[in-house]
Length: 281
Image 1 (cartoon, rainbow, N blue to C red):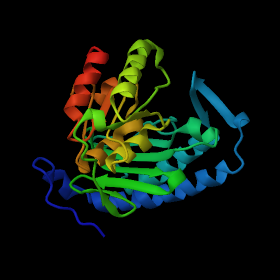
Image 2: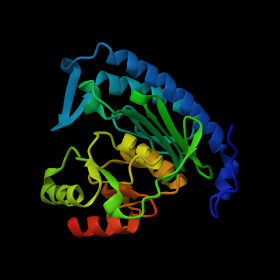
Image 3: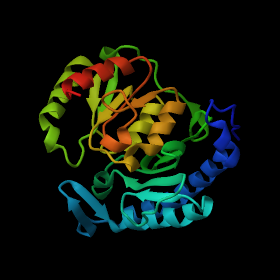
């Protein structure tokens, strides 16, 4: 069992109103139940059950049903909270609290029987993530944190890596569904990091990448045109693991502009500088 330590200044008042540790534990159990459903459906899944939302953006009945299961239970955990969901099964404003949900991040991987793919659930208070749970289903790994806690993987505390130079870093990036508007910059970034780091990876799941970064498997990540449900849980987990998250300008407007840059303390400034120049922000 983990215990909440003294929260940072400005967080104390609403920590007194909600037991974020207890909420996190309930979300973990719920995520396990929904993951069981997703795993069961994966055994007999075929591509003819896939719908295309837009180019390279897919959805299946598994995404939709998983989201319904999450929403139904989350309504009971924090009844006053609103919802922001990828598949649109629940869209409701909350006065202070919002659940931000991706029921199956990495759908393209899922429909091709590839890896990774994950459930991502965050609770925000006035736009600030206060609970974050990412369940990477294919490895049975649950990453989580709450406001004021450390970050954990299957009950064990995790931290970001200690790599202190970009040349020694392993970087992961994402190719968003709508990438052509910044395709030249995307290619330029791939070229640079392929030549000037230990390597560049593309996994197909932003949520899983952020979780992996929080435990030190990657040293930095970047992507544009992301949605809040792709990143909300990961933002909290990385920060509580000692990392940094911003948009490409170094500001905290990632929910609005969809640009996300995450890194450990050792390479964050260097990575931000390179991304800023490549993407001209």
